[in-house]
Length: 328
Image (cartoon, rainbow, N blue to C red; front, side, top):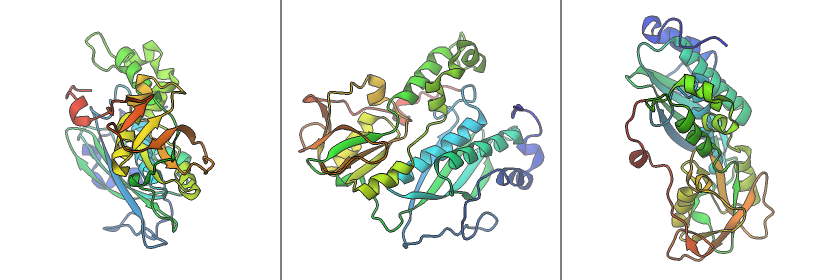
């Protein structure tokens, strides 16, 4: 694989040439009107659509020492596709804004685009990148906006869980956090700074959990499966099971009671970036797709989330509390 950190830079090539080299690599989808005008035109068959946006900034959200440009493209797409799925919608389009330092090689942006394409092809076939913007910044920054088609269904909200419902999850719990923990342990040099050489030398590069941290695999199709099965509430597990379960509990005015089995370790409870789906279902519903039982919805108590009667701290990733500003 060619090294994307070589060759002409975006400052040397200019915006029009960079756009041309990126757009040809991105998935087109089937918009009524794609890139090239001031706006794209995306169909909304039942008159409604869902829309979400998410940012990734070098440092707090990824490190070049640990992730390739293709990894970052994959993750930027996957995290937004997961939010669309959490509403019970089918991803229909992405808009991507990207700001890069002037000395960034164009090949880095091309590799980023390849990652976006790979994620969309694997997770949401038929979705496409319908527009975006390029700018320059001292810090590599990505912002993705995703659209989704509800297909005539009502959106699945966080606020619909009812006492007696089954709490269920689809996707990984704790794998991305285990991968990140290994990178912080084994992917740093003697000064504690992220280092590509340390990632390779330690074997972390081949660790499946590290791969899940760099390229999460959210269960996109299970969003629609949950909606059609009658899910009463749902959200994307981006910041950790406990903190996101707390959000669902508060929105619905209930308490979530986790089953004693399977045992969940600290990273499964409080680690983020798995981008699974947490949902509640009426007790008579057979859990669809890859969903598995995690607990039950009970009457509102003193805590948002409990296990064996004991409160579970609803902590997880918080960019303001957890980011210390260290360079990556």
